[in-house]
Amino acid sequence: MMKTPFVTKAQIEEIVKTYPTPFHIYDEKGIRENARKLKQAFAWNKGYKEYFAVKATPNPTILKILKEEGCGTDCSSYTELLMSEKMGITGSDIMFSSNDTPAEEFVLAKKLGANINLDDYTHVQFLKDTCGVPETVFCRYNPGGTFSISTTIMDNPGDAKYGMTKEQLFKAYTELRDAGAKKFGLHSFLASNTVTNDYYPTLAKILFEVAVELKEKTGIKLSYINLSGGVGIPYTPDKEGNDILKIGEGVHKVFDEVLVPAGLGDISLFTELGRFMLAPYGHLVTKAIHEKHIYKEYIGVDACAVNLMRPAMYGAYHHITVLGKENAPCDHTYDVTGSLCENNDKFAIDRKLPKIDMGDYLVIHDTGAHGFAMGYNYNGKLKSAELLLCEDGSIKQIRRAETPEDYFATLDGFWDVEV
Ligand SMILES: *Cc1c(COP(=O)(O)O)cnc(C)c1O
Image 1: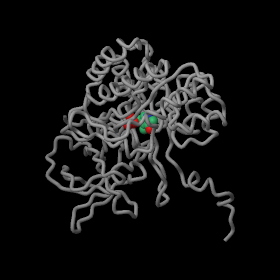
Image 2 (image 1 turned 90 degrees about the vertical axis):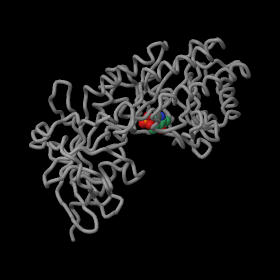
Image 3 (image 1 turned 135 degrees about the vertical axis):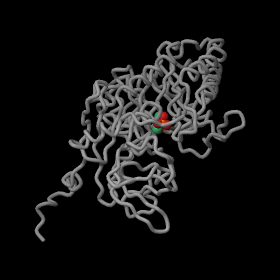
Image 4 (image 1 turned 180 degrees about the horizontal axis):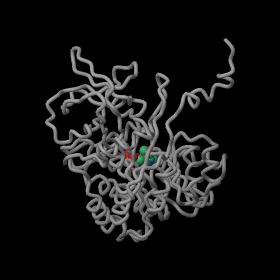
């Protein structure tokens, strides 16, 4: 599938008059349409809800758009809870799925009435000691071993720090019930960025069977099953994207096969997607400012890994379009680099692209999730602005770029020091 930017060169040339590069830009129309399709895919399940994983794109305006589309938030930290609360998303519209959780975060989550998801068996006692057991509580399951879809190993839950074993899970539910909990949910996240329509159905089957076994062994009937995140997107143009309607159907089939006959057909399903909700609807827009011809050909841009860490951190592929040269032949081979004093600060290595001229604008695709969010300040680099391409075509700045004042703000009296 060809990757086409949702902005044109002419649009960017207009935008940079007010907001200089680099910046992240999000496509409101794309976000809304995708959220509606997800909702449609699970409309067969009464009580279905998507809790957007805030960590993917922690911006209040994005949360507001998704709230309007019926989504809640999945939070895993104190500040994510605060952002959610500020946007009027509280109570059971919040999933609090954290791990290694500090006491004050449980306290705030409980105060907000969030669905608290316990990552570990020991957190049952920890919760009792810090804020008491709420009426509704979730537990996170880790089946261990490897997670496969037919013969393909997707991930290694046995090596992951998350969740509890089945034995611990059943013990946790029993103790939570004895401590007064009334409604129970089950959660598991077994593979990241899956590009197959079989991930959710396969995961669902595992969780549904656990629900049936839990009912048989303890008499506890789950009210909620949270399939969490992990539905991915095709970062490379050769891949076919997920079909969320097919995914919904696949889960429906397993639901009817496993839960309904066991008398558990009234369980509500939740999802906690981040990447699927936002990644394709964000671009990092950057300008070519240097070219360098040594042992390889380099294009230096005005963004760097602090704006998008995935290529440096995971060697992740992000497609690049040179605006205005969408149809030009890709007859040059470049490393596209940022300015950090780190050789892994490259958005692309040996990438076939059209000839790039200084001043050209590059769109780095699929940066709407885990893009700006993973930003940091290495080398004293500042975080960029975030812009929204609104449905009516106008541009709204939804976060300004950092300034040196922001960078020095945590150093008390920095500007007043006499040297
Ligand atoms: C990161 C995360 C998500 C979202 O994952 P995506 O891959 O972005 O869909 C959901 N739930 C939890 C607990 C997470 O840590």
